[in-house]
Amino acid sequence: MKRDRIVIFDTTLRDGEQSPGASMNTEEKIRIASQLEKLGVDVIEAGFAAASPGDFEAISKIAQKVKNSTVCSLARALERDIEEAGKAIAAAPKKRIHTFIATSAIHMEYKLRMKPEEVIARAVAAVKYASEFVDDIEFSCEDAGRSDMGFLKEIISATIEAGAGTINIPDTVGILMPFEVGRRIKELHEYIGDRAVISVHNHNDLGLATANSLEAIRNGARQIECTINGLGERAGNAALEELVMALKVRSDIYDNVETSINTKEIYPTSRLIASITGIEPQPNKAIVGKNAFAHESGIHQDGVLKHKQTYEIFSPEEIGLDTKDTLVLGKHSGRAAFRDKLEKLGFSLDEEEINRAFERFKELADKKKDIYDDDLRALVTSQMSNISQTWELVALQLMDSTGGVPSAAVTIRKSDGSEYTDAGIGDGTIDAVFKTIDRLTRQHGQLMDYKVKSVSRGRDALASVTVQVAFNEDEPAVIGHGLSIDTMLASAKAYIAALNSYLSMAGMLKKRSDADNCSTV
Image 1 (cartoon, rainbow, N blue to C red):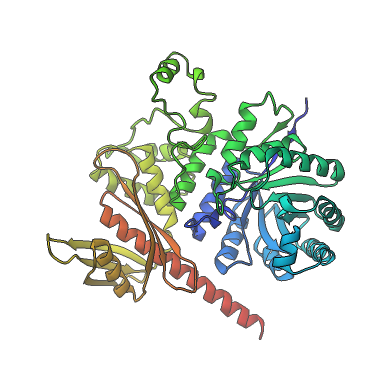
Image 2: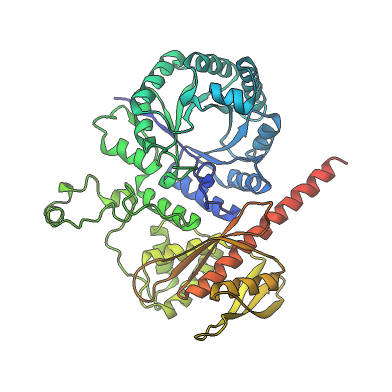
């Protein structure tokens, strides 16, 4: 029997980044996009080009890098947004513009302040303008879950006629029950026929995003919009890993559909996203949670030991999780073994990147007895997240005697090679470190969030520190990651990484501003 292809539309880099604290810099987004391509994602929504210079640059670089997946940019139904999207994705071999406008009565009246006929006219104009940049156009009816079905049909027909090949029906506020989604998609599928692909984008406010997406597939949807680890604003989106594995494990039910996803890349992708965003999946998260294959009950343990399928409906190896956790690398390991291990972990690095990572591995191996897979993942991810460096930490010395005033001495190096040293005090050791860095760099950061976790096991485990820092009250906070056996050292590295991201974003803003000024002359 011929199976229908379910288009997997991943929006981790756009909707996923809207999770509080999940902002990523350009290098991190490129790394994620490359991994999504390796995972087999059909469409990568790389961002919202008109949102910021940082988004525009990241989308542009992803468009140049990604060859097999379609690169997509979101755009409101406005000419400026669509033009920015078209420019950002121009270099991609496969490209799509995803434009949208609200269609529910409450949104049209209170947010848009537009009459229904005006909304239809705006949507049609947007799709037609998008066709000047791309052949592949997606149109979304924002808040379709609360939209009148008659109006939905009217605007869908108009946008298909204008050139939209995919029609997205988002449950923007996550209010629908599975049977309601199924009923709506079935009716729309019968109405649209083969004129366009029906897509769904379900939010998880009631914990039903995955269930609603699966019900949509049963009733005719052939594109699913989702994110890795279920990231997204508020309660998140339908989780890619849950959808794909549900379709695979229950192929007895979904025997007429298939996806292009390489499931062995699911776990490496999940770990990459968690490392970069600092947002770990909950321990009991389906598919990728750290307890997903843990068995504590004596009855369960006995069953699994006798036959795994007594309590495991699929093997961890199917999603790329090596449960053996074998220690194969140490201080005497060579470059070839190191390269081979990284490839098995899903990293594709060029020669220069391998050399840098190997140097850091050797430094780590001198300090840490056992090197685990998670140590290597963290080491390489940290390196790739901090490529653009204006400032680099050279030395850190802390003094915090009992009853004394916490103080820190810091030496940092600028990209031009000059070094600067200063010392300062604070309300605590971390505060002293950050205030000293501020004084050295002449910046002032406000710490919004601070997280520290152990990367692997043992007393000598690597500490992974994630900070969220606001350097300018008029701009969004940035995230920095630091890695070291020493927690304070990792914290200083994370703060400097956040500072470098902020300076990089500020530089991009200036370059775009200068270019705009030149273009108006």
